[in-house]
Image (cartoon, rainbow, N blue to C red; front, side, top):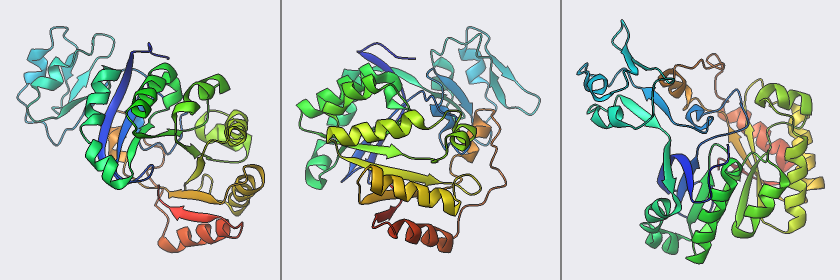
Length: 306
């Protein structure tokens, strides 16, 4: 759901990143996404409202979180873990602030443009020395287009390089709003078949592919990114179709190949959610090289990782 122009919701600010754009960057993760990718490594990003996560291995059983909550929203389960009843919670964050062991964590914080810019501005020397800047990620930045636009505008006003990382699934009007203030667009292409794309992500890919074409016609710099996942989109047919689309329809010579990893698996447990790919193993180095060579066969410069 779109937030007001001066206020948005984010779940993390990651500093000193050397991925998701050139140089040393600050990544601003906005909360909320219209897709439900079965391999999503940031499940805390999906809903555009605050959520609590619980780290049982950190909990020392002090019950400070329970005493801090005046809504009676926290229950202690038989195994000692804590469960937050969302319907009672007002997400004020008092319980997580009182959790000295950092076992109860609030994912999602409402903030103003000025508050985010204060975090961004603190690392200006790193941007200037490395050619870095700021990348808006998510979630999906287009879900908070007004807020994202104001952040990008303010960064450009201060001569800070800007990038957006997007699924591409949004009305074109939102892209039109943001593109003038983005120096770079990092664009996910998850599957070329619309039916399979819907099974894997919850939405079809027609809008995504058409928006990619329109961005290219606008003259904006775009780097396609291919998150490749075992048993999902790693067939020869799909890899070839992706290579053809990037070269023939987008006219590009570069693509980022993002192999599946399991780094997000424990986040599902903390959010009391099931992880559907628990039996799936990451690709071997040899498998990734094979995918890379297939894409290179289209004349593409393939970078493994973002």
